[in-house]
Image 1: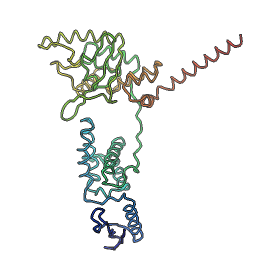
Image 2: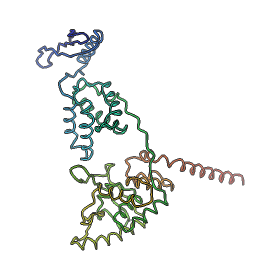
Image 3: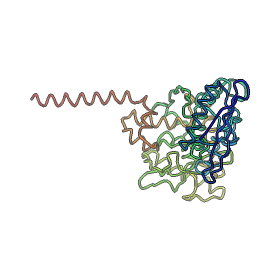
Image 4: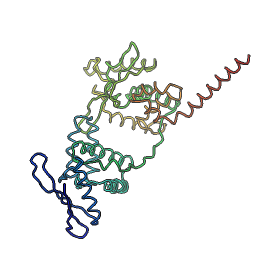
Length: 384
């Protein structure tokens, strides 16, 4: 294996590698362009020779990052949800391609990626009104890491330069939730309205918006007072699709007596309303529907919630925060985090503990007091 350098112009070098075809034995040359000093070019030449000798050399081609991202998006499409693929496409087309798309895949370096991510934080918005949020830039980096990992798997790159980049720090926003009194007020306000059941399922059962929109009467077990959460509604630009819940597996959520009673009353009322327009309710009927009996879209549920907030005297929180309200009140009431995790559908208890750590100090204080009381009781028993 041989290689040498040639100066093309001041600071610009051609690294010429003599390669041998492993099948035919024929020799050919491969040219690399390098910018820097002569010594740096020599070091780069030695590095390339070492890669060839070690069997990890990848011949550069003219594929740009933009072209590769298009290929990667097609590759991952069957293995992710439609909403996820839509988000990946948006990040690639609107974030990564404008910043790095014209760079040859083989020449993409960590320094160039870091520079692009830093610039996105300052001036990344398309409307020219400043930079992207740290959360969005973290998402850009995460997608790039995944894509370039695939490039390494396909032997298009020797290593992933995005792995060494630094993700921007995201300041965690305080989690918003209603307290017990506010929750009671909310349930009184929505009673009898179309938002009653969605709000009830979110704040009393911890269901996600998509899970509520996908729930059918066949998912209700009246004997055990239990909901089967096995599907979730996902809204994309192409419409609403139904998929597995976020954790990737279904779960059972027990209903309190009050929730089960409210659902029974609602089912009777819904049956009367739908029958009036010629629709007979059955187990396949969606629990949450519009006036015509069609399932309510997730975005329509959010819109209805925002309109409600304009009319009531309660803090403005997201509909998703009603789920946080349920979790916070569970933990504050002393329910074991494992049980809370199962009701919420988290894949691990660690997610629950991380999200709701703000509730833990009070729980720890109660635990410490209980242990203290137990030891004092035991001490008194031994003294007698």
